[in-house]
Amino acid sequence: CYGVDGESDSIMSSASENSTEPWFCDACKCGVSPSCELCPNQDGIFKETDAGRWVHIVCALYVPGVAFGDIDKLRPVTLTEMNYSKYGAKECSFCEDPRFARTGVCISCDAGMCRAYFHVTCAQKEGLLSEAAAEEDIADPFFAYCKQHADRLDRKWKRKNYLALQSYCKMSLQEREKQLSPEAQARINARLQQYRAKAELARSTRPQAWVPREKLPRPLTSSASAIRKLMRKAELMGISTDIFPVDNSDTSSSVDGRRKHKQPALTADFVNYYFERNMRMIQIQENMAEQKNIKDKLENEQEKLHVEYNKLCESLEELQNLNGKLRSEGQGIWALLGRITGQKLNIPAILRAPKERKPSKKEGGTQKASILPAVLYSCGICKKNHDQHLLLLCDTCKLHYHLGCLDPPLTRMPRKTKNSYWQCSECDQAGSSDMEADMAMETLPDGTKRSRRQIKEPVKFVPQDVPPEPKKIPVRNTRTRGRKRSFVPEEEKHEERVPRERRQRQSVLQKKPKAEDLRTECATCKGTGDNENLVRCDECRLCYHFGCLDPPLKKSPKQTGYGWICQECDSSSSKEDENEAERKNISQELSMEQKNPKK
Image: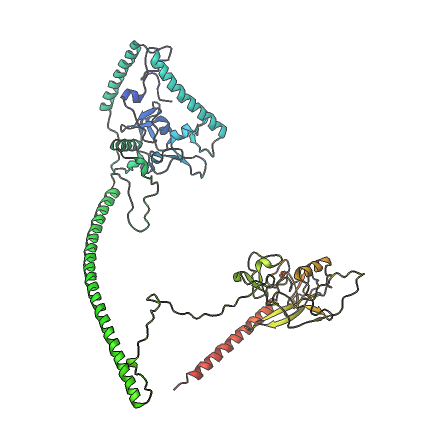
C-alpha cells in the first residue's frame, strides 16, 4: 500500500529475515514534517510530489486527477494534471474549524445527485471510504459515500477500527522508545542520517518537474499550511482571530457592477482588482475633500443669511408696531368723522385689523377635512356593527351577517359570479329542491336580472294531542334587521316572536317531504330525465341534462345557497347590458352637446 517492494528499498525492521535493518518512510528520509496540499489534516502517511510538495497517500488515491509517475512505487505524485479550480471550490462538511473547511480539495459523494463534499482524510476518520474487491476489474476502485448513503454498520465498524489503530500507534510508539537501548537508538539515528543524505542527493540530481507555461491561480486561503502560518503570526502579534467572521460566499458574482473582493493570489484578476481599488480610493478621497469645501462655503453663507434674517425680523417688528399705531389713529379719526356727520360710516379695508393667517398643510398646519357620515351595517344575528370587513350581504333578503355568526360559520367570503349568487341559510333551506320555492325575477339597479327565491315556511312538528295553531297572517313592511318575514297570529300579534335557534330546532325535528319529480324533458336533446340527472334554469325554467351543458358536467352545477342560469340566459343578459351601456353613452354625448353648443 506504500509502494515498498523489498528490492530497492529497505523493509521494516520487524521482518524475521532482516530484523536488524530499520525502515523509514519518505517523510522521515527527507527529514521534514509535511503538510498535505489536498487536506488540512497533518497526521497520516505522506508521499512527495514531483514539485517538492507533500500529500497523503490516501488523498492521492481518492482525489480524481492526481497521477503517479511510477505506479508500483506510488511515486512521484503529480498534481499538475488536476484542475486547479478545485482548490477551495467546495466546503468540507466534516471540518470542525470553518477556517480549514475550504482548504485543499474536497471530493463528492459517489451516490448519484448527492451534493455532499468532504476531505478524504475527514471521510477516513468517519469511516466513509471503501474499496472495490480485488477480483473486480474497475478503473477507479476507490469509493466514498456520505453518512446518508453509507452503510451504518459498516461505517461504525470502520470508524471504530480507525480510532483503535490511532490509539495503538501512539501507545506502541511510546513503549518502543522506552524499550530501545541507547545502542539501538544510535544505530537507528545513524542509518537515518545515511538515508537523508541519499534523499538529498537524489533530490538535487533528479530532473526538474514539468510546469505549465501559464501560471495556475490558486487562492492563498486554500492552503492549510499558509493558514496555520497566518494563525501563528496572529498569535505572536497578539491578535485574536476569533473576532473575524469567515466569509464562504461566492466572491466571483457581482450584483451592482462593482468588482467584489478577490482572494489574494498571483493572478491578473487580483492585480487588476488591487489597482482598481486604489484608484477608487483616490477618487473617493478627492470627492470627500471637494464636498468638504462645498460644505464649509454653505455654512458660511448660512451664517450670513441668519444675521440678515434676524435684522429683517427686527425691522419687520418695528414696522408692525408703527402700522398698529397708525391704524388706531386712523380708526379714531374715522369715528370722529362719523360723529360729526351723524352717520355710521363703514370702516375702509385699510383701517381694519388684518386677519390671522392660518398655516397651510405644507407648512405644518391642519386642514379641516369634510366629515362624511360612515354607513355602519349591523349583523342580522348578533345585532352588532363591529368587524365591517367580515359582513356578508345576502342577495335575497339584503341583510348583512358576520361570517362567524352563520350556521355553519364560514372562514372566507363566498365567491359570487354572473351565474350564481349567495343566500343565507334562512333564504335557502338545506336539502330543498328548486321546485319547493317559487322563483321570481328581480331587476337590479345596474339593469341585470337576477332570480330571487321565495322560501316557503318550513313544516313544523305538531303533536296530535295539541289543537292546531290559529291561522297566521303575514305581516309586511315590519322586517327588522336580522329577521326574515315573520308570521304573527291574529290573537298574539304583539307577543314575542320565535327566536331563530328555536325555529331551526323545530325544523330539524321533522324533515320536509321530498317534492314530486317534475323535471321530465331536456331542452337540448329532448330526452327524458328526472331530478337526479336534470338541472333547471332559474330564469327560463327549462331543464338540461348534465352532459348536454357546454361544457358537459358530471354533476349538477347548482350549489347550496346559490342560484344558476343557463348559457342562453346569460348571453341574453349580457346583450341587454351592452345595449343599456350604449344607450347611456349616447345620452351622455347628447347632454354634452347641449351644454357646449357649437358656435
